[in-house]
Image (cartoon, rainbow, N blue to C red; front, side, top):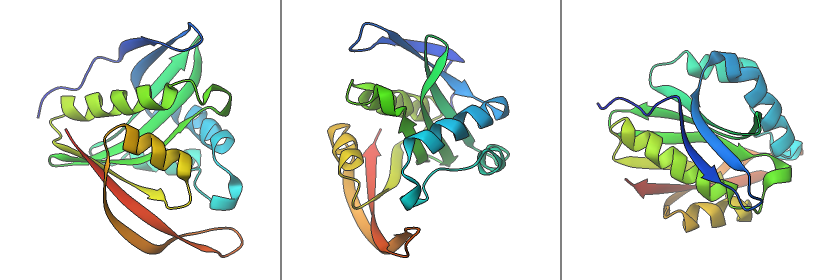
Length: 170
């Protein structure tokens, strides 16, 4: 497996003229990632992870996050886990105030690069079937549908929602 990219790379300009610096995160970033997840996800869908869940993930082999910072502020994150030559994108988000500026596409490019640098040949994920914005983003990044998991997600009100599985060849 090849060495992963440097801690701080990929300074990419944003639509508003700012720059996002991508780096690999660690345990010390768990609280900040949990705060962004809480702000980014609607509570109804129970998608945000807690700092404890994030820390537990990072304690497992092959797990990491890619973090996007602008002006010293965490504006995006992606949590991934690798098994052999496959990487699963477990959770990702862009800060609500920074959406619709191309940050999601840049995040997908950063995640794909990070996975490639670790020797991955395929990136895959699951997404709530009702999350049209995320599905559009993933498709625009080249992800292709692989399957459907009926009733995979359950809302706070008990509604069942299917998951769509997508993958991207690297």
